[in-house]
Amino acid sequence: MSTLLLANAQLVNEGKIVAADVLVRGERIERIGTGPVPAGTATIDLNGLHLLPGLIDDQVHCREPGLTHKATLATESLAALCGGVTSFLDMPNTQPPTTHRAALAEKRRIAAATCHVNYGFYLGATNTNLEEIKRVGPEDACGVKVFMGASTGNMLVDDPQTLEGIFAGARIPIAAHCESTPLIAENERRFRERYGDDVPMEAHPLIRSAEACYRSSSLAVELAKRHGARLHVLHLTTARELELFERGPIEGKKITAEVCVHHLWFDDSSYATLGAKVKCNPAIKTAADRAALRAAVVEDRIDVIATDHAPHTLEEKARKYFEAPAGLPLVQHSLPMLLEQRAQGLFRLETIVQKAAHNPALLFGIVERGFIREGYYADLVAVDLGSATRVDAAQVRYKCGWSPFEGTEFRGAVALTLVNGVPVFRGGRPAAGPRAARALEFAAR
Image 1 (cartoon, rainbow, N blue to C red):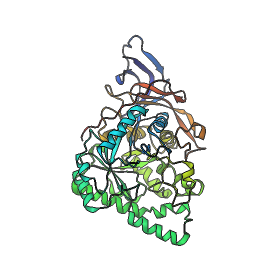
Image 2 (cartoon, rainbow, N blue to C red; image 1 turned 135 degrees about the vertical axis):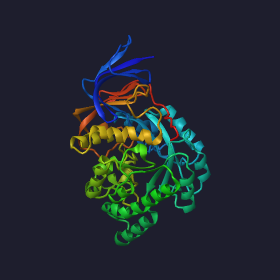
Image 3 (tube, rainbow, N blue to C red; image 1 turned 120 degrees about the vertical axis):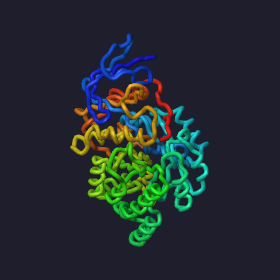
Image 4 (cartoon, one colour; image 1 turned 90 degrees about the horizontal axis):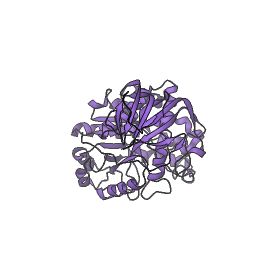
């Protein structure tokens, strides 16, 4: 079994930054600190670089099966490791949708053959698959994705009796996309009356409004409280919604909240320059909403930072408002963006690790990952705070070939990524060698 010594690191882990070496044997961390080094051990001298647990992105759309002209598990997982993301949880709105255990098994089969980072999958809820939801456990899926707002195909869950049944009977965490479809439809009608088919992109946060978000997220929280369910509300975008969530450590919560990196970076002024490239659901809203989301991360009202990585082709994004799909490619650049916000004084490095590695592992019961601990899998990322990441099309790894961050320079860069003890990114490029990814294991909470 091979051994690797990561020497002279600054470990960022469990709220502290400490100088230490890390000895990796095979897939796992054998020792943190000094001690005898086995003969034949390879050494990487980090020279004081900060060593983090690999990020766990709990919300990505890799588009496979069925939408592989946009992305695949292979292409998007390669982009992820270049950005220090070592595990992700993939969403069910593919073609066909992942709404039964056979579809979950097929995704795992594809991922086992092609994925470059560790992977898990959500079961999608519909108005008609309640009995399947009740049967699915942590051995099958990381959680149940419930679209409580307009979505792809038949995955909108708007039947009150079905919602009650999901919140009463799900055995795994419920992850909810919260927007009110009736209110969105009414807003769309008003804007069509005014503009016809030429609705400006700046109208998106008014159509997918703050009220549409609050109306749905407050319903989800009420259902979770009534049934004692474990609820994770995805991609919050508004200041008002924050009142629904408690402050404090994630270990004491059954209802948790998430923010995505683009809602921490952009605001509604971005539509004027980026147009459909920043069209996403729920919509990017005001600078005041963004400021409230940033503050909620710091005060532990928001528990998780993720991406909602959702690639589309540039041709698709060039369409008019109602035809341009919603979603942004983000997983390669989420950590560099957060490092830049650290440089701006918004977040401490320890906070980034807590929200993007520790807490996703705790929330979903991901076994022996998300922390730098002896005996845990060696999913690790070294970052250079003195370097920079400039985003341009030439270095974008997404299959869609573009990023909303193009032209931006972030202070901080990923220097090294390990997946299950294997260096998979080093020197600014993916490392040659076999894939090291594994299926994530989930423990009941």
